[in-house]
Structures are given as structure tokens and as C-alpha cells.
View 1 (cartoon, rainbow, N blue to C red):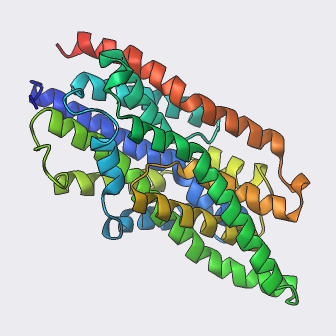
View 2 (cartoon, rainbow, N blue to C red):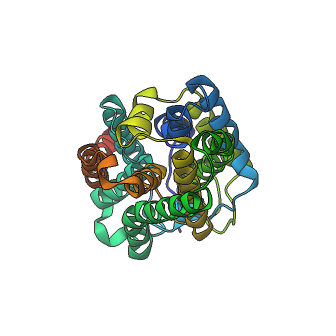
Length: 337
């Protein structure tokens, strides 16, 4: 495989851009891991973001880099990626993240990045340059992860309701307030483990394309791994409060027991996807789990109109970021000759 000739400053600039995306991913998706803890009053927003950021970074010690390998080597055929493709992909993803963050819509940073890669690659070499199995696996999990979150969240809610049917509501509330710290910690581990690896994957892709790393290497450079985990943790620390409100309160009102079941169901889904090496959306997963928990109480407890708006944002994420990435691939050709 021939390496692309790119000036060092171009590669450095793209690494900085990727780390900025990672930071924004933490900022944008912080709400997913802490919305339920905040909305049930277990932690104050400032405490919750520090708590989530800590577990985001600790995830570095727990998960293998299977998601990074999927993004870095499993979506695009070898030899297609160059610095223009990476530039287009990152701008497409960042653009969509800013738009959805501004309007407070919980869309997926992960699928914005996948959409960005797909759009930039199609602009360069057509759809034939994509690895169908890698793309299909990711697209399939757009539907599987919220569904799994929904099923696990609602199942846990049913089991817990049965186990504590004779306990007083106050006692149940107090117990699950404490247990929510465990479930929120697990969810933040899952968030760090899956999401930081997507940025590791795109930097790895760039370093392979420009010859800074060999394609045969089993792992990306250590500095890439640490930089990405720390960036997502810092992003979470400065987390976006706009989306926290939508996730924690607007979809359905949650009590501590519901928050625990939603986060635990979501965390189980993320752990499974990360073990399988599938980049999934933490946003989709926790939304599915929150809706599952709300619908166990009664279907009317879920504000389906808001859940519907969120679904529309999901459907548009990959095409919108792909379109912007395609446009910026051509812009990149002019900028980085």
C-alpha cells in the first residue's frame, strides 16, 4: 500500500481537529451518562460531570481497542483514505454536532463521524471503496442499540418492581439513589470505552495513510490512545446542559429506580457493542432505555412527540454529515494541495 505524501503540519492539524471532535463528543454526549442522575436529584450537575469524566478516562484500562480497529481499518478499503478524506469526515461530523447541540437535539456524534467518513470516501472514490460489512454492521446497530436499551431497561424495571413490591416507596427511593451512582459510573465507562475509540480509529486511519504507522500494527501509538481518552473526559467535564434536560426530564419523568434501570440497561448494551467492536451511539442507547423504563409505568408516561423528534434527528445524522463531508472533501483538495 502506497503512503500518501502529506506535509507534517497538515497531519498535525488533522490530529488536532480529531481531538477537538473527541472533546466535542464528550461535551455533546455528557448528557447521556449523567442526565438521569441529575434529573432524579442524586447529584448536582457540576458533581455529575466530574463523576462521568473520571469514568470516561478510567475506561482506557478496561476495553480492548476493537471499536478503534473497526473505524480505522474496517469501514474503508486500504489505500483509499488520505488527508483530504479525514478532513472532510471530521468537518462533516463536527458541523452536525454543532447544529444538533445548538438546538438541544440529542443526535449521535458516533454516527455523525461514520456518516462523515462515508461521505468523504464516496466523494473521492465512490461507494465501491467502502467495506460493506463494516458499514452495514454500524447502520444495523442504529436500530439494534436503542431496541436493546429499551428491552433491557424495561426488563430491569419489571424485575425491580417485582422484587420491591412490598417495600415502602421512600425506602426504595433512598436505596436506588445510592445504586444510581453505580449505574451512572458503569454507563460512563461504556461511553468512554466506545466513543473515545472512534476518534482513536480515525487518527489511526490518518497515520496509516500518511506512513506514520504501519498498516500491519496491531495497535495505534500509545499517545493517540491516551490523548483521545483524556480529551473525551475533558469534554464531559464541560458537558452540555441543554441536552441533559431533554434526556432526563422531557422524554419521561424519572425516579431514582427508573434512572438506575435505564443506565444499567444502557451500560449492558454499550459493553456488549464494545466487546463486539461495533461503534454505537451512546445517545441512541440511553434514549431507548429511558423510553423502555417510562413505558413500563404506562405508555402515556413517555412524551412520544419529543421521542419522535429525536428519531428524526437520528435518521438525518448519517446523510447530513455525509453530505457536508463530501463538500469539504473537495474544499480540502483546494486547501491542502
